[in-house]
Length: 169
Image (cartoon, rainbow, N blue to C red):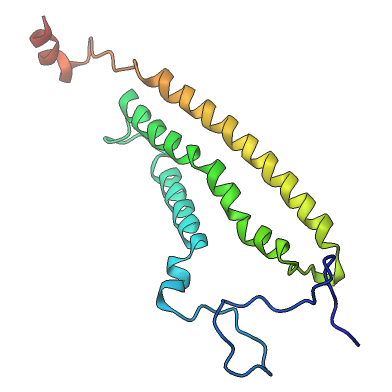
């Protein structure tokens, strides 16, 4: 029985980490073998950290607090969010590069003997849709940030700000 082949005719081989195999009769490992390749420093880990930071923001910003009260706080948050979402389009594209590189080398295998060409077409279509959505999200968040730029707190009639009002006159 021969090994399954890709559309390009290349046999299916396990994807390796690029390190030579010490015993060619064994299946190469896909486990990182150098400290700089550990899961703590991989590209997916950085996206996980970003997701954790957004989750933490969502948690701490649910309720108004001393450091989350005024329009300037929203302005600052929206500026940071604008910066974050502005990088999504590039991150989406770059997240597919390992798959695309593997596919270009005829090495993508689909579980259950599925069609790699069809799976890649779906991935590319979804990636392009996601990149367009990211661009639209970036534009909308930038508009929100710009809209909050001139906003401030009307302190008239608030006792703790009365001294400040006298100083401005």
